[in-house]
Length: 379
Picture 1 (cartoon, rainbow, N blue to C red):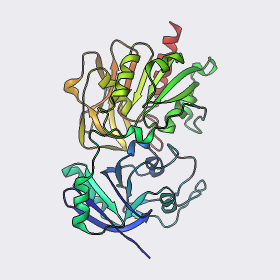
Picture 2 (picture 1 turned 90 degrees about the horizontal axis):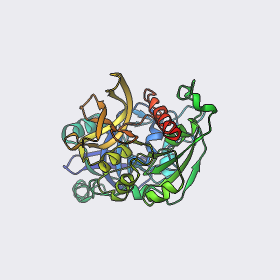
Picture 3 (picture 1 turned 135 degrees about the horizontal axis):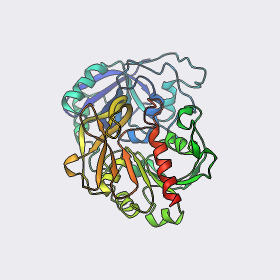
Picture 4 (picture 1 turned 135 degrees about the vertical axis):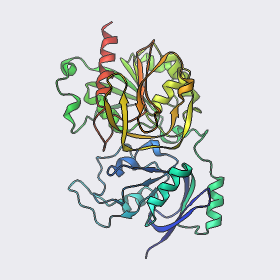
């Protein structure tokens, strides 16, 4: 029997549809992703912690779920919203359908709503707090709960997705040979990278490993600069992660102590944290950038890259210190999409060059990090 589910927004808008996945009730910020594929990677991306994600592509689940295309060990988002869930899946690598996968991991989903209307509403009024429920179906009650939910601003969501254990990564990419074609370092001694995990996608570690790096992953919530430097890494990577970057004082302080001591490369939240550590501030975007088709211009070369992005905060240009140079811009809204430190070997981008599924235009950034570490090691 079809179960009823409701999605209520804090401004009083309510959508009624069919529940799938797990039963229950969750709160989160309602946002949308414009990718046509990659729903499994989206589900398992820790950066979506605390969010109810709406897919704009109308049918989701048609190629099922498999154990390889994951970005972490489980889904991290609060809830999932789609227009239609595929009843059958067809892919030789799949071993499970989307509905049972969400049930297995306790993720509440809703289907059968007008996702186009929901996305237009968010684009007009901004991402907002919401409640997704299969248990409470009273509109007034749900709207009240949505208004009372905590939201994202000021919360430390990183601590909810990061473990406490150190681990060494060895898995490489299974495809995309363009990353390493004609790479002169393939025969060199491997470089050692410490990756500070703030909710890191596994494909980032795969890229670093593919480039001939020994990757040690440390929890960004508890690891100090002294502990990192004691490992004598050739470079430090600052990972993506969920939520508001400004409450993460521990991470900002660690990065400040590392600047100038080791080459650094940051992605997404890592980009925001590097900017904060250098003296900039961040702000919350109206509805964020989430999808695999965001145009970004490389200001060094003039080239336009099609990028995958997933963030609701950005670096505030008016507060950018003299020590940071803008290297990339988002062409949709002209926000900062990349910076380079003028005094230290450190750079970062707001988007995801490792994206899977997603465009491969920005793989060169991993090569730049490898070259930056190699040059520093040779000095």
